[in-house]
Image (cartoon, rainbow, N blue to C red):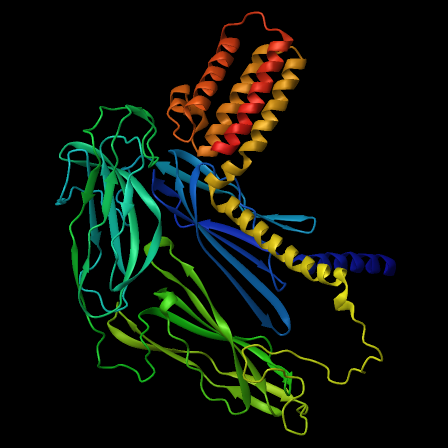
Length: 593
């Protein structure tokens, strides 16, 4: 009986140790599960762990959505000597088709273990079936836009005309398009003098009927924060539609499928909208706190320290975090109270911005090193921050909780009274050294060796390579067009190998089919087009290719189609020549597209 108990105890101990070793969890959620085609969905991902850092999550296949990264935030806390970290990431997804779509599990890999979140089901309905989407007006409204044409016009509107200084004004730009375009229009924003500006992704797209004409609407939103009181003018943007010389095309706004339309009159069309006048109100004088420094919005404040018991002259890292909605980038610095029992060194600040949901929000973190100069029990007092809340039209003051600190031991001071383990007093960075190293008996001039200098640059080169690799991986996760472009060559080479295998097995039709898929798929991936809808006529109109390459490409694809669908005698040498031509074309397309 005793042996069994020992055996069970060992199993429980091993299990608990394993759980403690990993301690990771991942969750994913969306702000809504039923949307209309073209409406944005916010995907939120949270990874928590019991270490100082957490691995980046691995996103599922999101090919049914347009994907926009909209924010990332990392926080670390230490409670009773135990680390815990949280990584929060958000993406804006815009569905590309109607029906039931699934966002697969988000995964996190820790050593040999893979932890996954639950899949999410999204129902995408036809536009107009579930009412008005946030930020979009689908009802009939009066549109008065200068330079309006029958098939194309633009407008701009704001959500408020009398904002306070520093209050967010949401500007919405809309491009109405009743016909397809050959080339992407050029949008020029005005200067926005007197405002700071933030983009509010993603762009919305939907249909709208005005005067019995059906338009496809592209909607772009920007957050404007007025800087000074008084009248402010938002000038008109300019949208230039270049001359259309083709009657078959691919729509650059990715709004319509391919089609035909009558040619427009020669010459570019320049579209403008009405200017908008705002009356920016000054912040009230009544009730303004003495420590108010200009912050406008809604904010919270909290302070964290990495430890509450230290030795004298040992640093404590204190972070003061302001979070909420408003112009995060322009937040004033937090005013720290006087603390005579501590030396204080500023360590900088970091910001995290989240522009999803049409509201600019995020956090600003101020970090300081706090060093007790004597032993005893001390208190870091509350830190106050005041702001004006435009929703309540009142000033508010928020405070952190005071933090108790225990310092023990004696200060390490030299004759002059300066602690010996601090270098660079008064600087933003400091380090710890040991001052009693024995002096070496003989100096070695290793710096004269070439290997010495080579080895100095190896870590730097490794760090630069790691940074570029991380940026590359992030872009692959968040930019579908970039990911397709980067993987195009690998996919086409794989299809060429598959074609050769089919040739060896005697599958002639399959051989030519793989060659055709390799070329068409490579073009579609490099240009971020839908492969199934790409035709030879579309290839003839690719401007990035010179006429010689286009002619050779079209001739090759026509020959492949004949070989596939009009079977005849196919010699091995002819198939080898076709494979060689395909390989050469792919190399040239890699350089030109």
